[in-house]
Amino acid sequence: MNMEIESWYRHNFEFRLRGRYITLQHIYPLLDTYKMNYEISVLGRSEMNRDIPMLKIGNGSEIVLAWSQMHGNESTTTKALFDFLKFVTQKQLSFQPQIERFLSHYTFYIIPMLNPDGAQNYTRENANNVDLNRDAQKLSQIESQCLRNVFNEIKPSLCLNMHDQRSIYGLKTGKPATISFLSPAADAERTITESRKIAMQQIVKMTEFLQKYIPGQVGRYDDSFNAACVGDTFQKAGVPTILFEAGHCGQDYQREKTREYIFYSLLSLFNIVEEKSGQIQYKEYFEIPENLKNHNDFILRNVKVQNEKAVSIAIQFTETLKNNNIDLVPIIDEIGELKDKVGHKEVNVNNGEILTIPQKNLTVGQVISKISAKNDDSAIYFSTIDFKLTENI
Image (cartoon, rainbow, N blue to C red; front, side, top):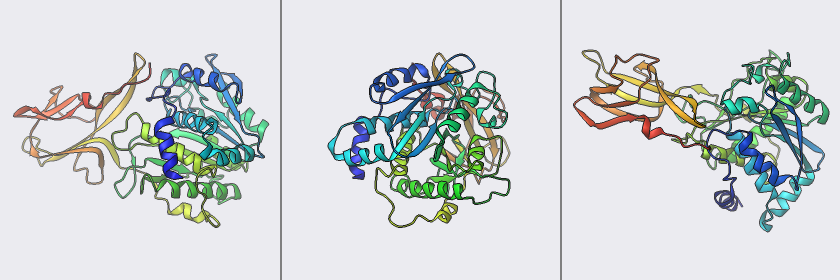
């Protein structure tokens, strides 16, 4: 069945959502498509008076609440949720038993874009520069209040807090943390409560399934307790909560492959694909390797700098919104031996000298657009053009 799922995805993913810049204008046509299939409501209006839509799928006793784009510039899980929505709506006979079981067992509430103002501006924060994932206690923002109100009203048995994580995260093996999960703490002591156990078991199940696609590339987020965070707050309230973090893979700066892995995670979570036989042991959660900040987008190795010892140069991209497109701005992040760092792409110049644009002394924080061999400018080691993104407009 897994091969059938992969084939379905290749030919049927929600192609109307592509790239990193996803706003209400991109999802309105999709919501219109599904208005005859599912209950679609508006939870409220954002601080800038934009809709906060919600879909209700299925009619089962297990109530699950998911929200995406709580951080407006984290859109990968939004794309994956619409992939999942398209899957459970399609009528291919080979998947009907699993889909019918899902629809009868679960009632799935999806808030595809909790922070539409941040999505429009491509910012983590909302229009008032507030991080909604640090507003769980103050509830100072309309968006935070909308989430808490629906949480109180529907009384979910499971919550899915869906995010993107930066490309700096990897694992001690040197592999990237393409997908990471967390069962948030419910108190400062990180007590293993019953709700945490349930979340851990579900994470173990999803992690085992993902090993078929990204072996050794699933990580575990730090579980330090923060009462201001939504996941910690809901977990403390006794509701199992899972943090999803869609990370980086290869040169997938559009996060199109990562969305596919989030889609597979959802299929596993809802038992649409093969179920794990026997009792899932929550303690296996702690065998998932913890995330490390050990990656950079690009590393140039063994660069000769005047008469000094050869160094490595790490470059990290900053994403900026420009004319409805996301530009990747390369910035020098670190200069040194960088023995404990891994580049998603690396080039070794073997003690060669380099020429940079702009032609300035190499310093941390400097924007850099091109690096070539000093004595051969046709030998280009790094160029912004190679990482150009084309986004939804």
